[in-house]
Amino acid sequence: MTTAKAYIKGSAFPPLSEGTLRLYSMRLCPFAQRVRLVLAHKQINYETININLKEKPEWFLERNPSGSVPVLEKDGKIVYESVIVCQYLDDVYPQNRLTPSDPYQRAQDAILLDYYSNKYIPNFYKILRDQKDEEAKDTFKKAVQKLDEELKARGKYFGGSQVAMIDFLIWPWIERFSLVAAVFPEVVLSKSNFPRLFAWKQNMMSLPAVKGIAFDAEFHQMFFQKWLEGSAEAYDVGL
Ligand code: GSH
Image (cartoon, rainbow, N blue to C red; front, side, top):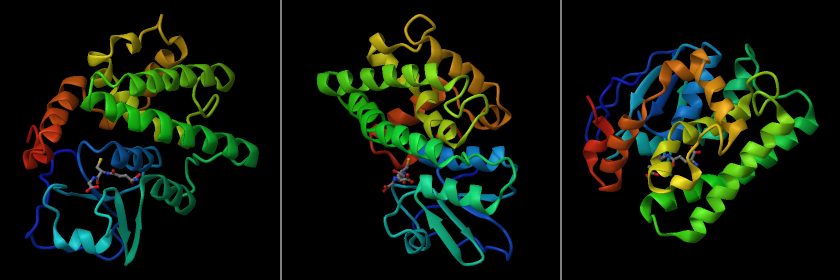
């Protein structure tokens, strides 16, 4: 749920009923968004408990000692780390399967995800923190080019003709792309700069799972500003 206020340190544990699947999340967290996309795509019912990540409730830290969202809980079983949670959901709820059955394709997707996790995501944040970080900008631009290039061989989606897990794992930082483009205009995600990635973005935005939970650029900007300032208010922005 994107309209529920975050639970903060000292708040009582919200009772969890038997058989209910619960996601500990944060409304603007891109890692949690990966899980929300998979849940939406697979049409799985769940409840959301948003967490104030500046002042975390004790019961949240008991569930994931590293203190990060997303965390999944059901009937005493707890799973965290976004990629692991997404994979777990695809294994437990086989409808609308997202993981390729071909081991070679799975390996190719894992290689792309590894590249994305090491070259794109960290530099995305480095650029936002320091617009003059030329090394970050250079690596980030190469990563965007690489995504565009990959789509030449892969097709409409990174998953080929159908959306796959790799698409949902990549999506959240493309939804937030305008944050970086605003300070690094060379990478504006236009049809002329990165035609395939641009088309992919349009294709993704037409999917019900993506449409249902996307925030617009202004909203991301509003959250990001407060987050950079280290404000505890970031987590309830817009509510
Ligand atoms: N590797 C983790 C994953 O993939 O789930 C990263 C998750 C992550 O960094 N989540 C952020 C978080 O919980 C919010 S977007 N930060 C709070 C903290 O680490 O203290």
